[in-house]
Image (cartoon, rainbow, N blue to C red; front, side):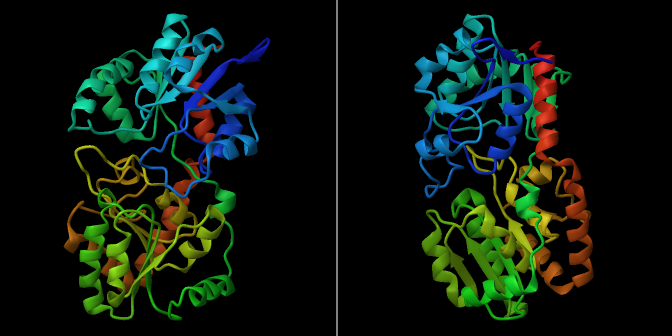
Length: 377
């Protein structure tokens, strides 16, 4: 298939910022299909405050990328691009991009991450009919996983033009060999006792990530494993509560770049993502699961995490899955892993093997299938 047009790039991918974990995918899409990334900026809830500014991201991008100045500019995209790809997130940018392409009878592909209908708030009530229309009438849909595909098919009435782009991280970064000397040095740098079991959380410290549940569960874990430590890497509204739990063996570390995370994952006995559903949020995926699994570190996730609902973290097979919002269930799962080295090894190795289908190449393949299904050629 040929995706380049004379005088410009044929396909636009509309997004808010260029996050490091998406850059390898965007580069592949540019190389294979002539995609240009258009960024409208703005802080989505999943983008941490410490993430760099958009101008710097655009300047550093190793692919064609530029700023998109709001919904009015999105309405004009059909004059330049043969097709546009846009995510559900972004407020007015999604309907504006869709409308702009339709005005010129161009192709539109939805990149869907949501797997439960957001509820609550007048703004959501007004916006949802527009979003539902896009779900139904997009020329093709890309999804984060089978859980999102099922949700989308409920609106479209079919799934023959719905394609899973399996969520992936850079294996060269997260799967690199980490030496015992590196993990020992990391422990020393953060005052973590040598040999103490470590449970690791990486992400935003906010209510919907299940931080409160995790802290409640941790007190139970510590009652039988007083030497264990809970390490939280991140920031957010609940950082003071995490910091206040230091007497319970909880260590709060600031956010770090992707290159520094593999050592933390390799040092950990287990990694947990205890997200809970709220009226306005359900964890779309949870790439920390992929990151940890690249180091063969077992993962405990809740059933409100997309990586579990989407089949990457399978209970008892590639990790442990517990009921969201249940501190006792989370404590029991973490305790199982702390007590059973054989289980840790089995789940860790199986988790790493499960990542064979979660690569940027596979993601790019799905984009190509969606473009072809939409009639872009």
